[in-house]
Length: 583
Ligand code: ADP
Ligand code: MG
Image 1: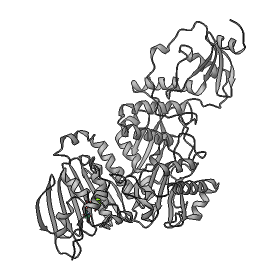
Image 2 (image 1 turned 180 degrees about the vertical axis):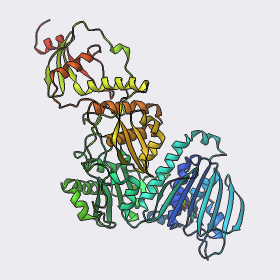
Image 3 (image 1 turned 90 degrees about the vertical axis):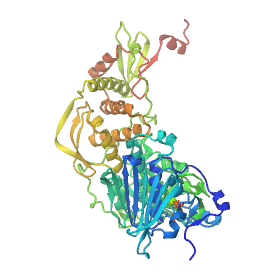
Image 4 (image 1 turned 45 degrees about the horizontal axis):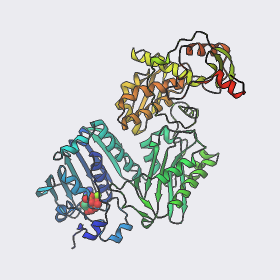
């Protein structure tokens, strides 16, 4: 019988997009999980210690590796998945390069234990720094277990680039979630330091998996999408206009069940949502594109994170079209029931009662007036030079467009953006309150239950103390259920769940960018933004006086915490020039 795993001929090996496959523990998790999926596993367990730096173990019940093939699998370009270069254009598996196992083996201490169904015993192979130490016969269940210890132990330079345990764990979890989302018919488990963090049981309905990963609440804002044109199918879920996020993390793209990043599809999605959700906000979209393997090239990126479409314009048009028509029908929710998820039972709304209130989820207030300005701008803190001494107080002339306060002062005619101004003042107040640990808070009579997505609960776990320092008190009441018991006392009514969600988005961003120190600043900005008076809000005379009075000692270059101006000054000279007056 010919060997199942073959070394690719030189010519094919050369056609492979070479590159560093193993950048961090998460790359190992991804590659080993992909191998397990390619082996047809129905159960996959991932276990990590110290964020994967100490140990990564991936266990599957797939087809296993033949005893004589085990050492072969560790050679470069040894794969059972393709044989000829033509096969590169007909790829049905996640792996195909025969690079992962040897790359991992080279930088760790690796043990493979594997058994094929027709064999009574299995094989155990020990390998250190790429060198095979032993191959023995062992008793083990059908399937494969790969254990990777002390990653990069022999490459100190690489170890230096590895970040904190939490960061590395997060990267691994991302891969775990992405793969779990696309393979509902497989059971997955993720264990860190002996604790089960996530477990998803296999199901024939993709929506059950989506709900399990994103949480019931977000799931409640999704509608199924289904579209077909020729041999290309689009399936998945897209958020209704009632929901949006502050970042693009909720967009999951898959091509032939491979998670990818793709600018064209991403653009098509944002285009479809352009006038549907506020500027600067993002939808949640889980999109599975299925097309013949010959219509894409998957061999373009070292970690297989991108693909190249033969006809990208067509993909753009299809994605935008499918989403736009789903969003355009005002009875989107009804459509949800009509269409079903195209992949299983039609979801019933009754089946997923929303927890807490039955009111529609309020659209989170854009941090800035919907003008798409990035929320990530961080201006320098309040500097003393912004304080000025004015002899004459501002004289309030009135409110313009229910948004600006028009005044006269020594500098000339002054327009004040009421939201930006109030936001800045509140930000400073909350910052001071926070420093002395006394953000005013109130205990709720009835706690608000909130279901978090896997990602959100992970971020909350890492930042609970910081979130609580904002005046919240949050208790875990289930695997991903929390109860909000105390909320900050803000001047304006607000949606506590929406705010916690916004915090978590901000925190997820600062964490990813390694800007942990900004966490508090970002949350204070959110608090201020939510309690500040809005634009398009008619103010009473006393309210204007209060606000303008508080601004009296500040220079006109003052900005809101997002960096937008508070004042707009038209000097007497400017007025004279406009009216063509001399001198
Ligand atoms: P690739 O996945 O690109 O083929 P890898 O280096 O990841 O390359 O794996 C090499 C070969 O080892 C695979 O082609 C497959 O035959 C075998 N293999 C690896 N992991 C498993 C597994 N978990 N179960 C069964 N076979 C496996
Ligand atoms: Mg592989």
